Image (cartoon, rainbow, N blue to C red; front, side):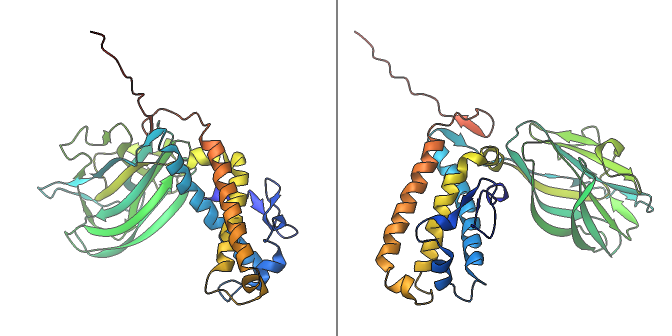
Length: 330
């Protein structure tokens, strides 16, 4: 997790945000680590940084596990296809290069959710090469470009499998296609019919058939609703995301990152494929004791945080209902 990776640094090499240095801990000096570096790493700094990054990822998983006794953590809230091609093969003229047409996606409420775009299809009546573009309408930024080749009258598909994070904010995306297309097939946003033709929404997301003039800033205020999706269809899911919660409390996680990082550095030095040296051979048992020590300190520091947390009760994190016992007196 990026928000945790700057909490702990390396003394005299990389200054951390929280002012904690991993190499002042016992067994984690640059000299000791350098003695065990193999060709997988350029130097001790590379090994330590790699292990710290892995430690941050493991903390995310351990955090999820730690809160399960308190709350039910939902994973996937919604998964569906938006853009169902009409059976009567209606088609609309492709844009002439003056507009971008596609599907707008908005996530609001439920702060701890993200959007995964799994697959995008484009159905046109000619074979051509083009691109699927994903814009952030909050900032006007082009986020992703996915190359796509179409075959006439057959949906061309591209597997995207891309996660778009909210980080506690509203999410506003625009999916469009560019290329030398002549006509695009119409698709209903909603599988059960037109549903106003240009808009479909559920508890988690709102979808609109939209277009914008080429040359305008690609932001929400410049979007206009239209009655078709420009031949596009999307497979997606809306998922719960614990990362914003973890990032909000990042300053509290300095010690877990420090101890988990130390544990993983020492485990890497003790691994069977490490370069033989005095650190590994002579002090092999000492390394094992230090690993146990840092593992215990990590668990204590993380549990101290998760055991005393007051968590939200919402769509993603639902409090377990208390069990009430009643005794019937005859």
